[in-house]
Image (cartoon, rainbow, N blue to C red; front, side, top):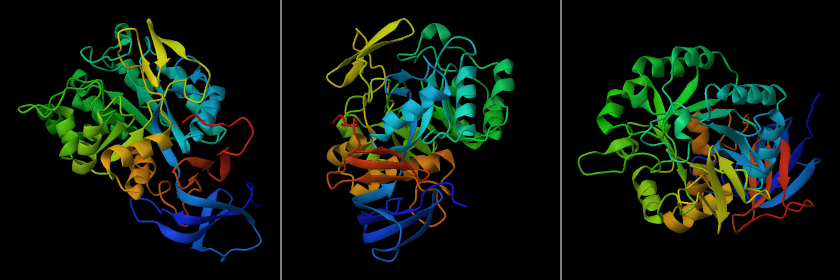
Length: 393
């Protein structure tokens, strides 16, 4: 017997995923949290119906630090994750990878426990875990507390090699660890991303066979692309690093670089991320990261020196920015928010496509590509016409 309501979505335009062009006047039949069938409008009758202008695979945010006045590092528990997921859903995000950044000692254990509890309860929208640090380079800490940055040791490995039933990303500086530890993390199921790192291109090339999955927030907290040193940016461009997260707010990465990476890396390897903090979808306008105070000013999060401290960005805005700044076709921009993150996580066989058998995680948009509703595994996380959901633009 079905535990979730069945319904039909009628879409004027349906983007099936992975950059495929729109299909017109299509209906999607959803049963028990999965897509049962896709057909022309009118093929399914007798079910609750939702009419929408544009339907796309549900957005997946693989790097989000907070939302809805909750910061994962400050309150690492299942309740906070549920609040974050609902706030992120206002930007079309059907699934979040809550991101726990650098903290002292083994504080990351609390994040692991929180995600275990949330996924055990099948909390809508909570997909897995992203640990961003503390195993970073002291040369590239960014806003992360430098005093907490350290190498990964065997006691960490004992915790990180434990089995988990949800997707996991770990961002680290590969030059600060060993190929053997990277191998072990990959074998344990982690998607190992390069970030907050001073690693060279040659070092990354030497690690190509060790399963590195991508780069975290491309261009930020890493060496620049130079004539005689391509660095991580060059490694993403030539495919040495298969995927990369990209903050398309026009502040973290110049619009010209957004265009360059779209043209030379492509939408099938670039995953849009928000890097959002608790201010997103909330009321808080300033907060602390370690000893640093971060302020929300004119849509920009920065400390008193102007150093960026995360982003204040809804995912649908990131999609529109890629169209505006990079001349990305709509289908490509949508893929970078939904299909490519699923592939980067290694779960492209269950998310990121609108097709029978896939999880019913969907983003519903109007003709201006603003979110009308967000569905996660057949559950509505957000509806634009619900009371108290007026959305920031």
